[in-house]
Length: 162
Image (tube, rainbow, N blue to C red):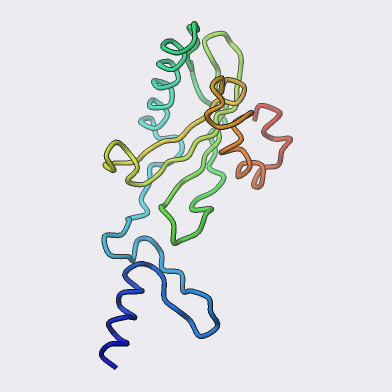
């Protein structure tokens, strides 16, 4: 009996426990050993938007002969929180319309990730400006983040430059 209890405790510590029907019990990431808090900045947080703007300007100036910068954001919207499930690292998925310094508008798809900042400290931000993913880091048309956005908002909402 003691051995069974120790095995069950070990399974719960890693977020999975066997069930009689062959499935597993989902243990939210916050309830694991050294778990997550689930507290993430909102999509419109100035620090998040500034990080996207700074990195976009840096990428454009260092890797492409482009003076493009993000001048401002509007239509900022969260379209999902923890869409991958409770037992994964908490992520907030967001969408915004960015106006660039050339007066063109582009959709920005981004997620805010808990403890995925530099060396695992603070929040991390993955982002993509639709139409300006020149190195195809997120596949054509920001494909790595885009399917999730399309699932919640529809393909036409993304193509219409949100």
